[in-house]
Amino acid sequence: MEGFSKDGYITDQEYFRAYQYRTITSDINGCGWIAAYNIRHHLGHAVTPDEVRSELDRMHTLRLPGPTTMRNMRAYLKKHVPQITEHTGRNAALDSAKTSECGILRYSEAGVPHFVSYFRQNGVYRFFNVNAGQEDFVASMDGFFEAHVLPLQFVSLFSCRAEVLDGSGCDQSPSTESP
Image (cartoon, rainbow, N blue to C red; front, side):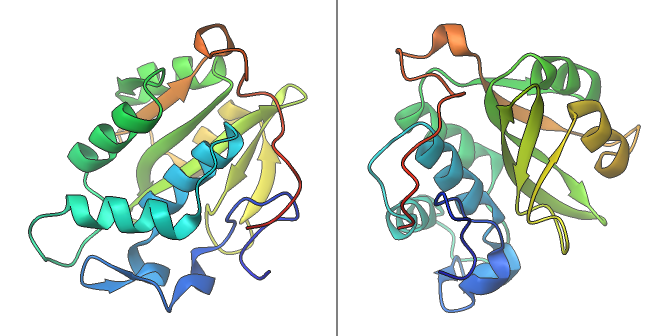
């Protein structure tokens, strides 16, 4: 299925033009719900992309254009991934990300607020839906920050550590079936 990796992660929001999110389509502002879906998929939660999109969309009480707000992402993750922790600021986010097993980063890509999901794989990180040409790619966390997060840029991170997960572990791969 286009827009998905072989192991079921959403890799490219461009394929989600038909999915309304807030007042516009997900190819423009779907990165938040896509990152939330990818984390839940990685953790083995039985959830569909449309269930994640619909629930996050309903959390926005004002029908205005725009991305997923941090307030709504925080509430959604607290409900569905209670073991996730939040870190703000570039240095705190980078330090925590380097010791995490999986997470969601919020930063600005080319001046536009953007959410991406990642998980640790063989000592490096696999990132999803970053930008054109980097829909599903592997890099060190330092390398990702150097290429995508400007030195004075505001960054938020929601991350999971293996020791706080309930036995499933972020570093375990889910089934290889696409939704």
